Length: 85
Image (tube, rainbow, N blue to C red; front, side, top):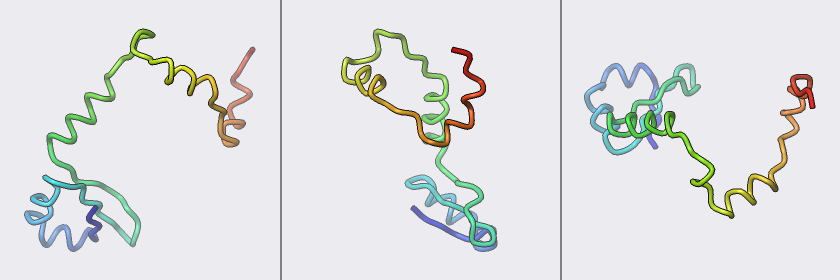
């Protein structure tokens, strides 16, 4: 992973675009990560995952067991008012 300030990114954009072909380039502003530059192939791979729909037959027994054994995080309690069970 490469982390670079936005000023440095602007000065050497071609260099960091080339680097992004093989690994993500995190661009910071005021020391905080703001954007990430990735290759087109990686972007498209991630977008395909957004649209992946799984049917019940796609789940293994191990996956189902893991889901059944999972517990919500404490932060999830903030949404309890939305449940009408």
